[in-house]
Length: 279
Ligand SMILES: N[C@@H](CCC(=O)N[C@@H](CSC=O)C(=O)NCC(=O)O)C(=O)O
Image 1 (spheres, rainbow, N blue to C red):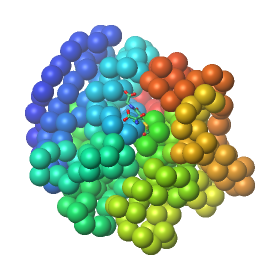
Image 2: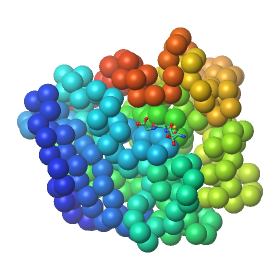
Image 3: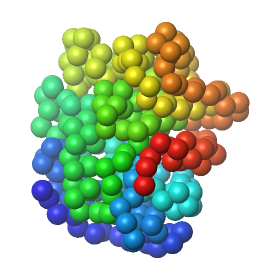
Image 4: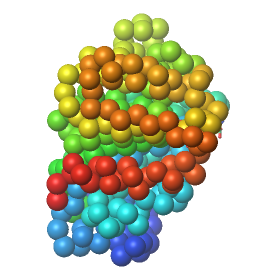
């Protein structure tokens, strides 16, 4: 198991906002991530909310813009904020913002030149929790959330592994990537032309097959520029209705795709997850 190297630390709402780097065996490169440890973590192990960010983001966007730390400190929940792809000079990339570094889509790539590093599904599901629960004061209670590409990642990871997460939420997720330009471009590159391989990573298709009661909360702004072409929450809603899923999908009037939207509702998402996470 790789060691965590401290990069940066600030005191925040009585807790610690910390940035670490480590060598990822799964991603085959050095990675950075951020963690907020609430004040309670100085006394005992605390549950964690994994936050998956969207296209172009690193671990910094959510840490700096969402304003999640105050309520996480009150609730005694750690925030785990990974990067959105493998990184580095030796890591395959693409000049476009929606492929390559900053755009890992939380899948395990099967196609060259991406296979060697782009294994974000396994990194988030297994490597990072194993590492963090061994080296930080974290319990094995986990919830997951994310935005846009990260909302897609959170829903897919939770629906495929409901035993690993107590609850899932998302802000403006890419809800049906098989049927939108962002998803089709990324999945063609990372997974190849066979669309059956894509189905494992489509939240709407996965929800249509899901028969459990995992608590799910999704917020979507109706003034989001990406809503009609890229996000397609209707597909998720229809699937949820078909299987009577434990899904609350809220359209939020006037909100766009930005971190101002996330900052407006992150407190409600944290309190939602706190209702399922045990100390
Ligand atoms: N063309 C834009 C697109 C990038 C963008 O909007 N990224 C969003 C996530 S979109 C879906 O995954 C984001 O979170 N941006 C970071 C932020 O801090 O707002 C561009 O290149 O900027």
